[in-house]
Length: 149
Image 1 (tube, one colour):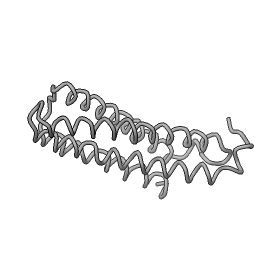
Image 2 (spheres, rainbow, N blue to C red):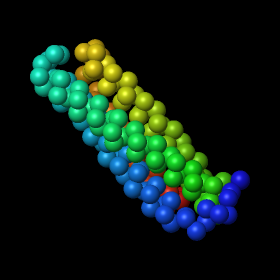
Image 3 (cartoon, rainbow, N blue to C red):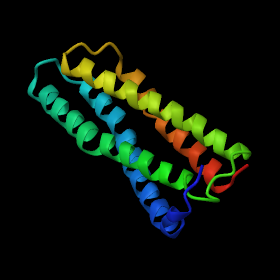
């Protein structure tokens, strides 16, 4: 189902989708790095409390709104005639990577709650490895959309 009335706005939707996706990814690159540094503090210490504020603000004021806007503009693109060939493999690769990114986003939210409650269960090394996940998903999504293998 597409809506021809969206066609004149296609390039605006595309630009806004890319802008919002970039903001979302920037936050997803940075949040696990904050967790690495947060692991280096003692629960209740001033530095730990500062990281809690930084993590909350990053997630709630940048990452979450950017993700929501990315989804909204992405759906507008999907409903624009000719934007998506549902038979193309790149589309399903992008959707698969996007589902994994949503899962990672949820995991980051859960980890933030653990830090907030001084109940972190993971090591600094764990977060260093987790920090690479959004980069890999970003690469898959961009290659899928641009190269369309």
